[in-house]
Image 1: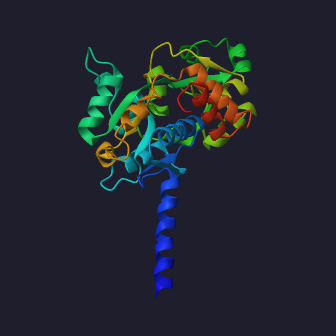
Image 2 (image 1 turned 120 degrees about the vertical axis):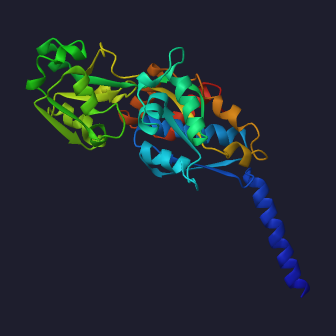
Length: 305
């Protein structure tokens, strides 16, 4: 009996030692991985900075679209605690409103922040420093052939050109999509071609279509030698990046991470469009891992030790 008690006591002590050595309180934050390198990088930065500055462990689950991620963030039994998004996405896709709904005297960010807090209890943190809005782009050869500088320059030649983009851009989920865009500018393309988002750049480089929609900070724009056309009639709103935190998370982690909001906000203002383009280029073109690139950036910026 004494031997059994001794073994049991040893097991308890060993468990205590291992728990103490882990550095974590047993509390956990869950995110989902994004479908593009920018989202993946920002979520990895969240993991690294939170685990560096708090006793909370961060888990990043499998890839999920932004729309589904927001649903998981806001459902009654949420499976997602934090996600990166953009004020323009919050307004047009999640809240299903239009930039024209923003009251005079308020910025889109201020309005989206207030509305998503009121409707869902979600806290939009300070802006990260990137404006990753939609852009319309063409291969440089097409721009040279037709003398394209602005989106309006496409109007007289759209009938000769094919428009290709990821499937999501052709859905009706939100106002910043293909149909509202083409109606706004009066564009009637020869053909519209939906493609898998992971194949889009290869398709445009291979000449499968002539015009596409891209994001400002995507490093693949540089690799594919795309010319971004000026949105001269201002169809696309700003898409300022910011972290979204679900309702109740701060209270649930008040003991384990009373400084959580400050830790997350330490990322705010740390990025620029140029810097994010460099980071996504390092992942998508140079083939470096998301963790390597994110850790290097945070270390060089003094955000983790």
